[in-house]
Amino acid sequence: MIKTTSLTVDQLADAWKHIYGTSPADEADPLVLECARRLAADPGGEQARAWVSGLVAMSGYLAWRPGEEAERAALDALSAAVKALGDRPCSHADHPYEAEMDSLEDEVWAGDTGLLTGQLAAQDDDADADRVLCPRNIAGWARLAADVIAPFTVRRVPVGAPKYHDSCMRTLSGIVNDYPYGDPHDDLIDEAAALPTRPTRGVLAGYLVTMNATCWYATSERITDRSVLDAMLKGIEAAVPLLGDERCTHDPDEHPDTADSDHANRIGYLLRSPGGRAEIAESYGWDEEEEEDPEDDPLDAWVCPAFLHDLAEETIAELEDGLESYETAEAEGDEPGGDDGGRA
Image 1 (cartoon, helix red, strand yellow):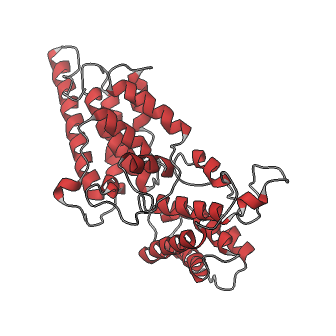
Image 2: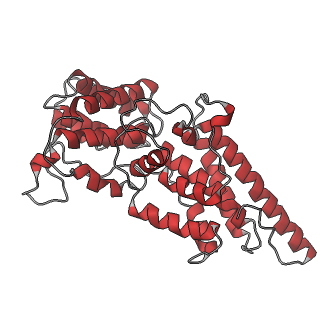
Image 3: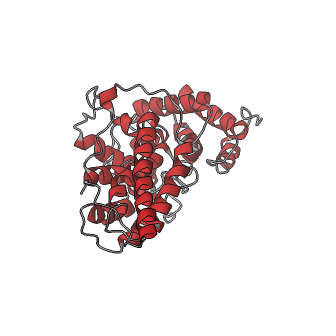
């Protein structure tokens, strides 16, 4: 186990860079706990920027399978930083963390927040250190890290999914509305292969929602190549074991309705980034000043493992029915392809 209490900030920062989603808990948790401990001790202090930077750097690990104590400590410390720094006065129209949100396509931050040095790695030496080190910029990074670790648990994340996600939404919207822009065969196979090995909760949920939204099209007469169904089935079967086993806290009627394929497709990509989830929250009428999730619309139900298990089972069943139709048609010498699934 790493002894962290005597390490300097520079030594800790070097260690943070080597913590990934695949890092073992005995290597990562001590670093997370030490970083969270130092941030919680003085969340509004001069060194808060360093500890927020560390938790951002390790958020890929924290969003995967951290120790329960490490996850809780990190979230509590980030929340304390937001409360201590987020409402301090400033004269800036915007902050650097907002521009960096477009890089969060898979939510694992691999860049430099600039919080340790006062500069962003991508900028010149005359970077606006005042904006980088602004308390509201530090609080912004804390919000992003917390939302990546535990989706829908923080407010005041700027609205806006990464541009790449917007592009994917438009492509799949064309498919589920039956006017594809490109080749649906290639687009659906690419989508089926899009899940990272160690997805965050938001990315995993979004992937399964998108697979469900598009499966009717894959099993319709519009697709005549079973490789699409095979790829989607393979992707979902690989995703299901990655779901957590947390106890469901929702009432039976609180899980989302995914009957509208176009809406579900859109949600599926918005779930994959903090800015996208902020857009979902805005569309549901969340009040930024509210501390609690509205009881009638618990948005964390979109990332609930129980809901996602049920959704995956439904998708697998539809895809397997589609494959059975292919096999029957091939045996009878007919043109493969099923019906339209009734979800257009």
